[in-house]
Image (tube, rainbow, N blue to C red; front, side):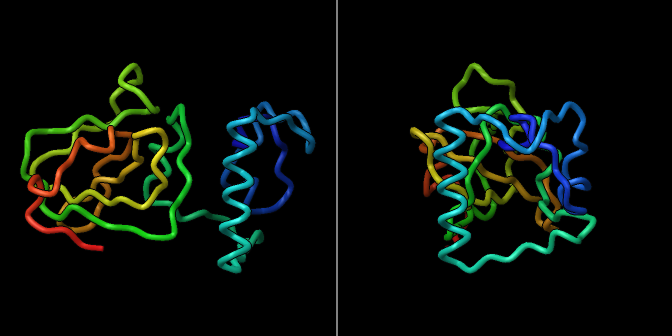
Length: 156
């Protein structure tokens, strides 16, 4: 969110994760929604004593390629659960909150779907994995899109 607002990163990690193309400075204006999300993230980081190695040259987020294409960025929750072995008809995942956004992936039978982000107005950001643990896709779906009986098992 801060990168999208034009922030120029100075740390090794910031430069590696965000290329600083089009950055405008260290003081950026965030929308009210983005400011609220950043505050929520900072609160979670403080509560969990998070420390980031800003000297690192990489950022491990297995769905990073999808996140770069998102219209609406998710906020990670402190808990997670998973639909293991999706077995219903496909479910579209989208680049943003709402059906007007582009489809980023179709959850397929056999996928496992990880729930680990906060609900936003009845929409959830999820990541779909194959049985070997590789990421198939990610995106936003309506909270009720996958029901308990749509999965072989549930975890979490």
